[in-house]
Image 1 (cartoon, rainbow, N blue to C red):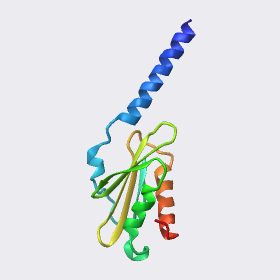
Image 2: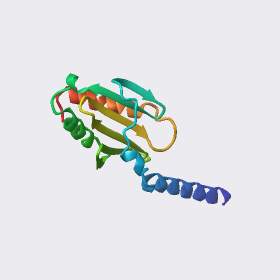
Image 3: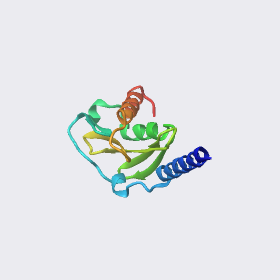
Image 4: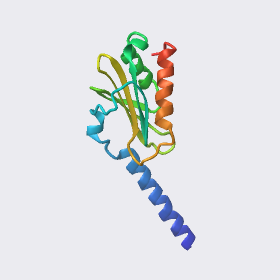
Length: 140
């Protein structure tokens, strides 16, 4: 009997945690930020990555094409336009990752970072790399 009650409490806590992860509001300030670094390169960070590429090295219309690639990613939804903001949720738990895409006229910027926690096991860097690979293949 104690086992059944304990199991019920545990399942209840899991359901509440799942609901909180999926329904908690995203930090609005993170959807309009343009975080650094600003110099070209791949800049790994705890919980995400910032990639800055010179527009001269990218195909024409790179910003719009990268946005189309991001929007076509499973479990991804566009949330804003300045900068372009997307949220991608993990398959199992629905943890949100925010990706911001913008151009400063000289460089294309992509900042992808988790919302909850500290480490993302390289998920954001891998997704960002796939998006740039798709862009360079002419997708989008």
